[in-house]
Image 1 (cartoon, rainbow, N blue to C red):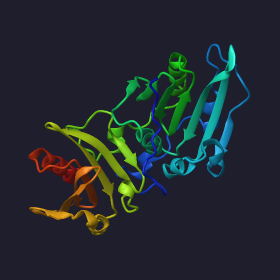
Image 2 (image 1 turned 180 degrees about the vertical axis):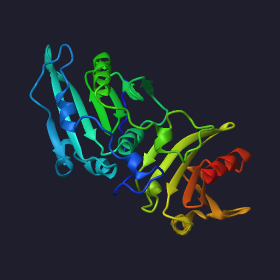
Image 3 (image 1 turned 45 degrees about the vertical axis):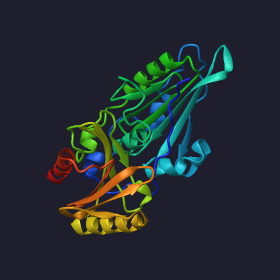
Image 4 (image 1 turned 60 degrees about the horizontal axis):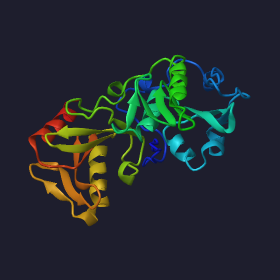
Amino acid sequence: MKRLLWLTAMAAGAVGCGFLSPAKRTASSGPSLSELARSLSAPPGYVQTKGPALYRRDSLYLAIDGMDGEYMSYGCVGLALVEWPKRADAQEKIQAEISDMGSPLGAFGIYSRAHTGKGEFADVGEEAAVAEDAVEFARGRFYVRLMGPPDARAELEKLARAMVAEVPPGPKPDQLLPVLPSVGRVPRSERWIPSAAFGMDFMRDVAAARYQVGDTTVDLQVAALPDAAAARAALDKFRDAVKGRSPQPIEGNPSAFAYTDEWLGRVAVFQIGRRVAVIVGYQKKAAIEGLLGKIAAS
């Protein structure tokens, strides 16, 4: 049976400064978490139960123990759970897990951590990742997971469409993460990592995507720092953190180095103005140099 993979992102801490102005990253208008959860009706064949269970940041662990810290790192301010048992078999149920992530960026970010161009998608709202027993999507400031029995996909998709109709759309990834070049970008591969990318606490507010460069696919991650001096300091910290892997200067670029990682392969790190860009799968090719040039120009 095909299932969605709920992957753990490398993230801890609060949402940092961004590539897009704070005003454009804030919560969109629309229903409150409680209003959205209470607007839902039981799918056909399922029993309507009492109102949703609502959780705040200080009680998230009661709903998603072990993942509450990750959710809060993306900005989660509350979560609602709604369950509908199946009329013919109360042991089976459909569950809606609705998270108010505080902003469209937070909602997209936590959705994107597990869906990077792989798997099956449906045209629900901006995008929904689907499997036989689950539908997952971000809409405005909300991140939604719908789960049910293996034969419930049609009901889950209908429920997702009903929810999407209640919430105004948020910015698309291109608007949330404009620093990412569009040419060569693998569709649906965009991600946002609030902090601790590569396990390094100074790699915050990271925009990431995969790129097809000739016959090679590379992963690009770009962190925004306050200014060029801070970016230079972050580059030096990164080099120091991987000194055991013998980082070497990149010829012709005094603000870059490369090293080989046992699991990631060839990794190159660049300072570009106030940003630090990391390319996993790096090869010295004109197309990759062009990709870096587009970041410099953005």
